Image (cartoon, rainbow, N blue to C red; front, top):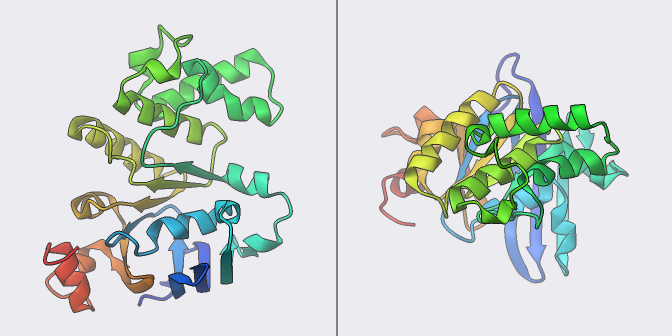
Length: 258
């Protein structure tokens, strides 16, 4: 497993992270770092612990009963368990789920929801945020003349981009994407991938995907999980080469299993 490299700054540091759902082991003492402003691809079969990892990062795993977490996760050197304002933590970490979850509000109000919740009321500032986030999510040109339309009336691909715009509205430092393209068409997927490449300049992106070629296209580095274990993490070129460190990695990315 790769350690710290040169002057690379770590955004997240994970040490001995273990998660259980009751008696079921979901993550088994994994340790690795996430670099600032990288796209980290996270791949592996179902039930490998990928989504669990994202839920640990923004502490939404706390909503799941009978869950135990051991080990440490540090964000900018600070243990996230010591952060008293969990809502502030979640504002720093945007989350996009596999299926778009639109609020029953207008397109405008979907994006303005988080800034308003944080206390912003000035219309000109809200207008600027809404336009910027919809631009970043490659949706502005399609909806700029109907911002008062219900977000739930958009197509599936548009709703997913609206979800991304909403996640960006509180200017997160980290963007977590959990199978964001599972319910959208390939053309829309490619548009969002281009957006992610641009966003990488501004934030760290964690990309959980079952589409190994998506990780190959986008990720700076890729982590391969299997049955709760971190099998390896390395540059994406190495993970997808003929000589990754683990035979299991080679077999998975080449479709032999999974």
